[in-house]
Length: 321
Image (cartoon, rainbow, N blue to C red; front, side, top):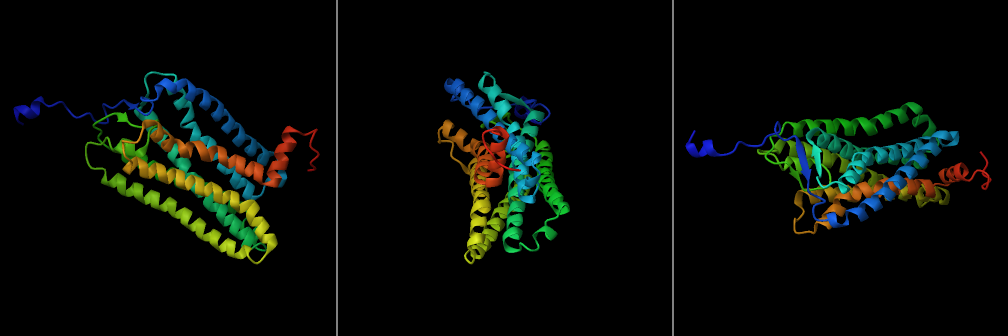
């Protein structure tokens, strides 16, 4: 070893990286109290809307059908995913040091991104449910049994958890040469970019997961093309499609473009974009889907809307069981 090599500082590796610094708020701290106030209003509202739909579906037997069970699962997942971001984000808004522990960073990655993948899985099984209900109504109840519904729910959670567990293991094996993450929260690619060496294995598996789950969207869109053709022949089927499938399609478009934008921008986006714009782009899939889903299904679906009104205005609204 030469004298010059001996004088160089040792590489900072994963054993010495105890905390990560989150730099996403550095350029917007002058407005932190405004952001905190907005978040303090938005997050409880989002929780309230999701919890309302969950309790409404849980408490009323007439809503114990596959479609409503999947909607309930979508709302539970929204609470799960946002819990990995908003409490920490609100704490950072009131703190001058925006740091997160190494273990906390990996947990945050797991929670946020397994929730995003679970959204795709849930929307996929919802599309299958709507296909059976509209195209094969006579066989619907014989196919969509309680056992199949349970298997679908397990698929929605176990597949994303398995994918994210592998990604977390791959990330934890990386030797890191830095500890600054240029986002508001921990993100897979942001951590991988800190690696001292090649991340080929991480990238290959990551792209496999991305293509697999965005492939879910392609399958859903194809199934909807088939459903639209089916709707052309019947006014009754067309009404059923508009009431139950259009909200589902809006949710799918919303979560697909929000997450696709985040994934592509984190890898190929320009640093010349203002920090505030980058923050909004990174937050879109944590802002819009969790509040939009319960509003879409809670307000648009007549059965759910009636039961919600009955819960809050039992005396004023005469809605029969």
